[in-house]
Image (cartoon, rainbow, N blue to C red; front, side, top):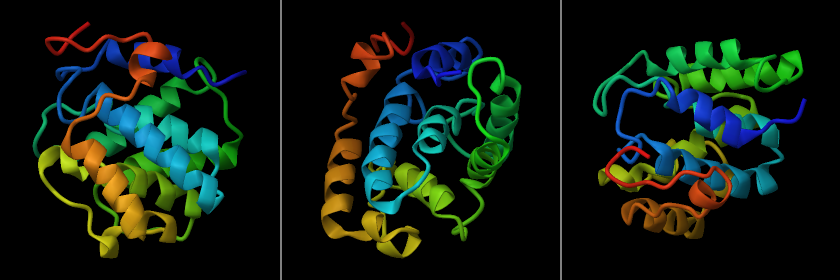
Length: 177
């Protein structure tokens, strides 16, 4: 079974409670996706886990502020979609589940794929006015000043990656399609 990200994005958006163009919405997922692919090329992280994390990690937020249980809820959504919209070997699925569940509460993890997922998300803090600090990033690739500058520039200006419209088929306007 191929991992078809546009189908997964569509499925999670059916029940997404927040504006699609909000702080934790589709453009954020896409920037995390691109951050993750860029990092994985250097870290050796499992790319399918990084891709799925990007589109699932915030998909069950109930508000744009404090929502401490959104990561575990996202991990459970991943469990319900596995076998239906994507397939991963057990080990890779456990990495995805752990990355989603722990992305807001945990600072680091021994697995490079999980650290890559978390760094991809943390590099997008500029969207809420925070510059990522190297001491909170888990990979050397993410800690590089040029990586932080590149990612923060995109986040701060709330860049909507082309893949949102060109690959995922979503036009962001007025918070909903």
